[in-house]
Length: 480
Image (tube, rainbow, N blue to C red):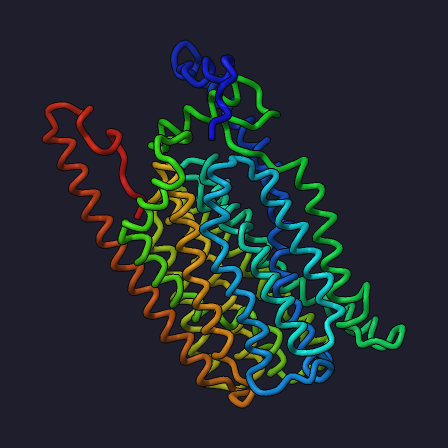
C-alpha cells in the first residue's frame, strides 16, 4: 500500500536537502522537526501509562478484597494475570503487519486503545472466576497492537543513535504507572470501599471504571495528535517531510522499503537474530516478573494497604531517572550492551539483598535496585530497532515477533510468586536472579557476534573494488 502518489511529495523525496542548503540551516530545521515530533510523541507516555495501569489494576485490587469477592482459589489469581499475555502474543505479529500495510498508526494505535478501555471498564462488572478470566483474555487481545506498534512508529522517524532515548521517553509512562498507578489505586481502594454497597475494586465508576474511562478519553485525543510516517503525515511541511526521509536514508534506513508485508514476514522468520532475541527476552521477562507483583512485594515490609501502595511510587521515579540517564549516554556513546549489563548487574544486587535479609530498610533499598532494570529493558529495545533498522517490512514483523514471543516469559513469571513462598519470597528472587543471568549472557553473545560482523563489514569496505556492490551502505555499523 503506498501513499506517495502526490507529485509534490515525490518531488520532495527526491530532493537532496544537503545540497545548496547551509549546514546550520539544515541543523536548525532538524532541531525544529525533532522538537515538533517529540512533542507529539510525548502523548505516548500517557498512553503507555494507561496501558500498564489497565493491565496491572488486578495487582492493586488484590490488596483489597479482589480474591475473596471472586472466590479465587489456588493458582487462579496467577492465571488471571497470565491469561492477558495469551491474547497479547497471538495478535502482535498480525497487528504490526496490518500497521505496515495500512501505514496509519494514528488510527490503529488509538483505535485499539479505545477498545481495550471498554474491556477494562467492563471488567468491573465481573462476578466470578470465569468472567474475570474472559475479560482479561480479551484485554490482552486488544492491547496487542499497542507496544510493538509504538516501537515500529518511533523506528520510522528517529535515527539509530536517537532511538534509546526515544524508547525511554515513550516507555517511561509504564514505569511511572508502576508506582503512581498504585498511588491512584490506593485512593480508590480506601476512599471508595463500601460506597453504594460495593467493594472499591468492583463498583461501577471505581477502580476498573475510572481507569478504563480515562483510557478511552485519552485515546480519542490521540487520534488527532499521533503522527503516521514521514511520507504520509499531513501536518509536516514539504521541507520537513523531505528532511525526515533524507536523514533516515543517510542513517542507513530505507523508510519506504522495497519489500512487501509478506516478504517482511518471511525475512524476519528466517533471521536467527529474531529468535535469539525472542528467547533472551522471554528469560528476561521471567526476571521482570516482580513488576506485576510489586505491590505484593512491597507489602512484605509490613505496612497497611494505603502505605504499601504509596511506597510503590518512589522506586519507579528513581527507575525513570536512571533509565533516562543510561539511555542518553547509550545514544551519545552509540553503545548498547555495556549499559544493558550495568543496569542488569544492579538489579542482580537487588535480588541478592532480598534473598539474604528481611530487614525493612535493606529490602526497600533492594526494590529501588530491582526497579531500575527498566533502563536495561529500554536499551534492549533501542538495540533491537537498531539491528533491524534497514527494511521497514522486516522491522515491523521482527519487533512484533520478538515482543510477542517473549511475553511467554510473563506467563511463566505469573507463577513465580506463589503466596505460600511469602513473605520472604526467597525462591522467587532466586529464580529472577538466575533468569537475569541467563538473559544477560545471551545478550552478551549477540554483542560479541555483532562486533565480529562490524569487523567484517569494515574489512569488506577496505577491499571493495566497487562500493555499489556492498550489501550495506558505506559507513554502516551495528551499534553494540
